[in-house]
Image (cartoon, rainbow, N blue to C red; front, side, top):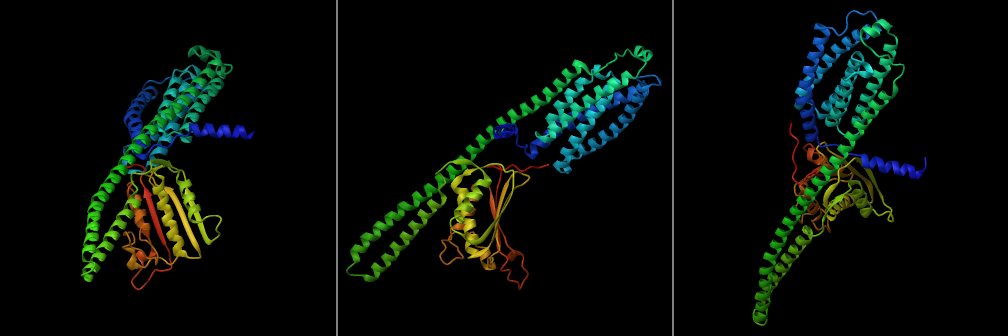
Length: 473
């Protein structure tokens, strides 16, 4: 296959990809379709079939291949009843079970339904059975309750194959019946599957494709709307915080400027007579300058209203931060080990905020190791779609007395540190409803054990939404 064809196929697959719905939405779909709609319908359907088989048999006592098929379908029916009862119990207790168990139960139930409808179609007319339309209904039902992707396509393909089996069995069974039986049950012999069978297969295939395509369009539209509202929420949060920080700086800097001007005037007035007063005034000026520097740093530290919220690729941002802290042109004995577990949802945040978080954590790990050592960078997506990024090192670790204050502004364990690195990490993470935590052997060390030499691990997590809505079942 030519490279251009491969690229075209990859692009086609990307267009057909649909992100898996969040657990809450998927669980609601299963509740509505399978528990609230399908369970009552199946109960009525089973009652009708049981009446037809046991009270009023469909066929008499014809000792023929057809009679054997009917008896086989009766055995299949009782197996179907047991399977339906088991599925019903699982759906009733779905709130107490993992979502994956419920989803695979729905897939298995779809397969069993397809097989049973195929068996009924065999004894109710085969290729001419009106139960063909139940296969169409099953495909639509599978699309409604099964997440888009391989499991849905597999399930609907299996449903189509069940109808193919109906055609094959119909041709072979009716072909083995004698003329008397054919006239008795008004059967039309089929020498081959024929054009009507092909047309019905086309209907099933088109139904499968249309259901999947409609879901692709609806899911993409839903994601576009959600992303737009999420962008607006993120921007609103950051601009509100930015306005608050700017107002704070404005209100503080004005009186500081007045104090500074007054101190200058006072200094000129007493310069020749009172040296002690001048010394005190210099102290005031130094404190004002220091306070002004702090406010300026805070304004640069926040930078809340600058930039814009973007859709960031988690892996690309981590790799970019690693390349920034460990430039390929500058060899080092420190080894960076990467362990990513995609897929990741995009992070909706300002690029510089995430870059500062990752760069500060990587730089701290590098400083802790010195000339050589190992840094372990891991990233994965939790079940609630929150993204977790961990950066660990095997350096000397953090002394116990410093762990409690590690995220405080201007507190540092380095000789020439500013004390802003981890404070920036905590601040930028919490802006997006996330959190940062330190995992260190020192936190769990026994009395008398220093725990030093086991390194430290910082983990930041970002929720999927600006205002997280936990999945409660």
